[in-house]
Image 1 (cartoon, rainbow, N blue to C red):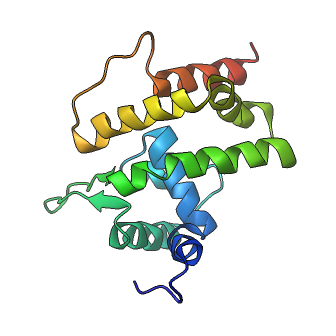
Image 2: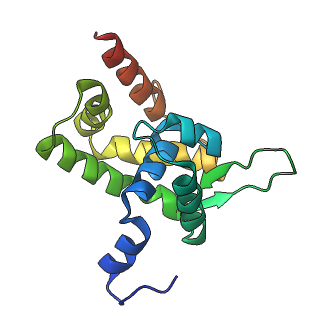
Length: 162
């Protein structure tokens, strides 16, 4: 992919500026959805299968995701690359903006509130956890539940209304 200009913002927007690409990344990062079917059925926005297939190809071509090889009849697993993991602060910033300026349901806003309340150190811990899950990096010790476990627990509590 050759960007339209040498501007780094333009180059990033050409890769990440499509809403579906960002939502696919959100689901890989925060939902740990790594297979096509899980991404398709887990999309709360209702992504179409052809759009999902296209965005996965684009994200792989851009070096944001890798696609594992799968034998005939097996499912291919997608993994974040380091470039993909480096999008987490971007997703965090977009989520904070959305939390401040856009309406939404309490359940779906919970993850962002937890992240904001925990601050930048939480984002770094999350990125470390993603490196372990996606890049087979050695796990780093963190006290208590992992960032993804904390986010999942907070969302489940919000879903139950507690």
